[in-house]
Picture 1 (cartoon, rainbow, N blue to C red):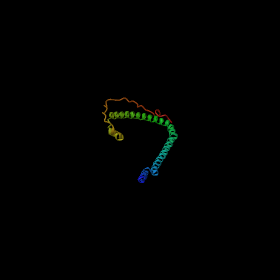
Picture 2 (picture 1 turned 90 degrees about the vertical axis):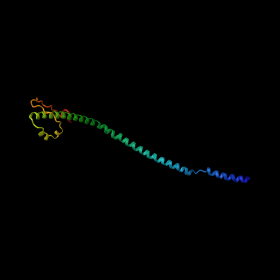
Picture 3 (picture 1 turned 180 degrees about the vertical axis):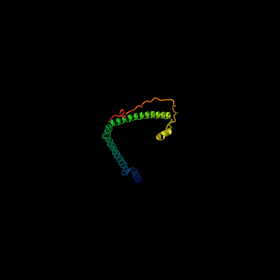
Length: 155
């Protein structure tokens, strides 16, 4: 019986030995593959970071000084644009004054608006104004004349 128990014990030991056997090569292969994949992604990320750093250094070294050099030119351009806007506003005021004077002269002389309306294509957009009474004689006032030198420095 003891030999029978010994054989059973041997078979049982062999069965349990199969559970204890580990196939580390297959399990480690998946770990190695995962580690290789992570290393490859880290290398890609590192190359992207290096590209971004080189681009930012190029921006700092080249573009920012160029922008700083152009700053004064931009300020001068803004001043000139402001002066041009002022000239346009003055021209608009003078044109409005001139149109009113022409309307008064047409009304006093009894000239129809059709003749000058043909010459001025913008007269289609003009609002209809009440005619000035011909009995009233307006006093001539010389228009204010402006010069561009008042607004723009000669360069």
